[in-house]
Image (cartoon, rainbow, N blue to C red; front, side):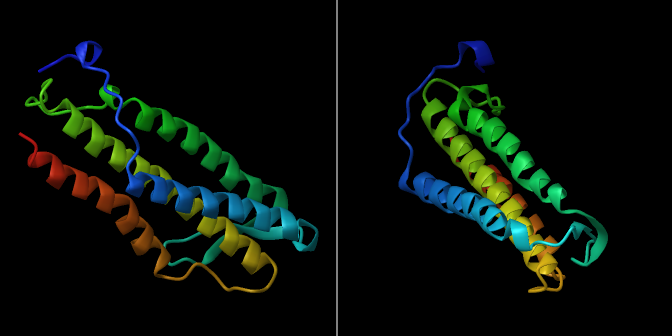
Length: 168
């Protein structure tokens, strides 16, 4: 097992799936911010600020609180982008070595890419729905939102763990 400081630094080009995930995640995230700014003057002073597990609004807040989601999104984007960029810093099993490093790095980077973009999509969806509710276009996230969000966040991790076991 190589220690993190002695792991090889390998330049691996982004795959088409990583580019597609980035396009989807960034487009939805930026689109939700544009949507917020476009409708800002029409948004009432009180907006949905929190939802319970059933997707029902359980707290209302100031419309400036809508900027919390994009702000957290930027933090996550930067943080997860750094992890994605440096897969040699990730945690790997004992069987990690110089011969399988490229496989581990690519798989781990793809998982981080998917998680980053799923987080951006989730934040964009919540922001869009909150603005829509505030404008009277919607009623709540719905009972589907939490299970779909959890599955969306857990699936890349489980898939990664399954695929990682196949690397020799």
